[in-house]
Amino acid sequence: MENASQLPVLVPTRSHSMVEMPASVSRYVEAGLHGAENTKRGYAADLRSFQDYCEHHELSHLPADVTTVAGYISQMADRGMRLATIRRHVAAIAKLHQLAGKPSPTSHEALHVVLDG
Image (cartoon, rainbow, N blue to C red):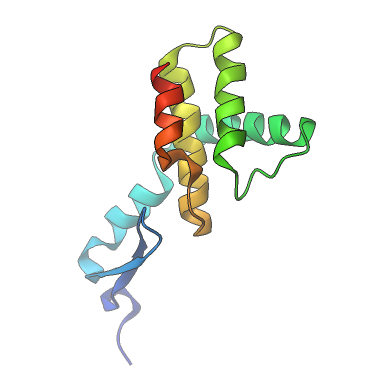
């Protein structure tokens, strides 16, 4: 039997496929999927906020629809949040979907139009 540290690593991609990578990259894959501690804390708070928004409006947060994320973005912008903060929330939603193996609504072209608005 192979040593577990020598087994290939399966990495989820944004296109929802899995790519096999050599075992030597496993620690970088883990860091990339889970992020630094500050990023984890920020994403966790952002996702709590998104989930609260979804519950309040009786919408699904996972998988989320593009119109749900657009409404959430609009609400944050109306509250005067900075674009960088809004983009971090969107990145957290994208990471949630990636880790869950679900298509991310954040890659939808219409959402990019909303973010540019």
